Image (cartoon, rainbow, N blue to C red):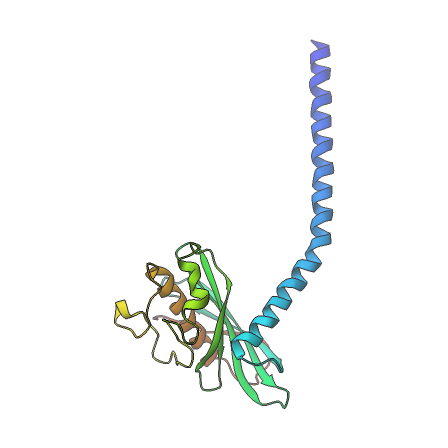
Length: 209
C-alpha cells in the first residue's frame, strides 16, 4: 500500500513538474512572438489606411475614439484615424467599425473624404462563410455589383431587399446588412469627431439607428 501511495505521489510530482515546464515554455514562446505579431498588425493597419483613403503619401494626424450604444444598448467603440496629405491638407478619415455578422464579428475599415463620401474600405476581421459572406471584401468595391464607393451614408445605406439602393451579396443578405450597418455606423462616428481635435475619447449615446 505504501508503495502504491509512493508511486502516486511520484506521478503527481512528475506531472506537476511537466505542467510547470510546459507553461514556462509557452510563456517564453508567446513573449518571443508577441512583438512580431504586433508589428504585423500595425503594418496591416497602416496599409489598410492607405488603401481605404486611396493615397500612399499620407500622415495619420490624429487618432480618436467614439463610443456609441447600439439599439440593444451595447456600447461599441469606433477608432477614427484622421488623415492629412504631405502638405498638411485634410483628406478625411479612416474609421474602424465592428458589427455582428452571420458567423461572428465583422470589422471594417472605411475611408471617408472631408464631405463624408466613401473613398474605399477593407475588411480587417471576419468570420463569415468562405465563398459566401467572405465576398464582402470585394462585392461592395468600385465597379462591383454592390458598389458603395463615392456614396454618402448621410442617408443610411441599405440592401435593395429592404428598399435600399445596394445589391446584397448573393445568398448572404445577413452579411450584407451587417456590412452596411458597420459602414453606416462608421460614418456617424466620423461625423461626431472634431477635426484637428486632441486625441481622446468622444462619447455619444445613440438611441436609434
